[in-house]
Image 1 (spheres, helix red, strand yellow):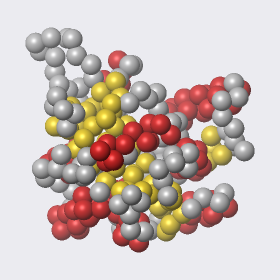
Image 2 (cartoon, one colour):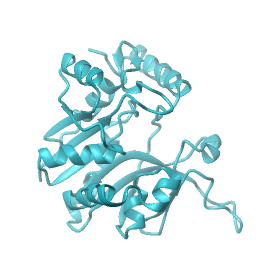
Image 3 (cartoon, helix red, strand yellow):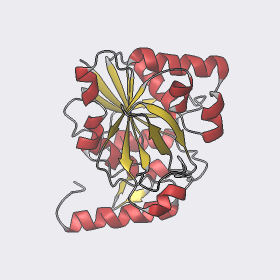
Length: 254
């Protein structure tokens, strides 16, 4: 099975412009994400997909495989879809460019179910929320699944509401997705024809387009302390973590 990884990266983020190039201990954030992906042995190739000349130039200078894509895409998944049409593969994995602390084993967790389930079209990851603040943080999408781990809904609100019992663990989305080409083509074609799906647009969570249209999205629980960089405060948290890992000899910037 040919598997490629794609990291969508755009400069014009509404909350944090230019964040793929934000410095983390001497390297841009996109470098950290790319090098974590390159450690996943399942990938034949990993690409950064961007519409920005600055990001493209930095990637080239750092010997990162990068592809220039259209500046008309409304979502990162649309950008991944363009790469998939240029580089045919049996499985395409979308890794968000703002999670520089993702472990290779976490990324691989989105791939593994496809080896045993040929009917699987879409996978996504989730991890148990340990910080109570994240339960009410609107920047953290919460995942609700059925007993088989199939996604029912994702929301930025605190849900489900524990009316009957407080014995419940909340889960947050980890932004690594596995797509069969058919599912990715559906996503892109739907966007061209209709734009965002109804609830997808309201919550601003891309994976809801699949759920709204009847796709079974398989969720895989992982142990992950990743920090998605949505704000400058998030960036400072990541810098502190990376600095501590460098000091402990756990990672290197070489």
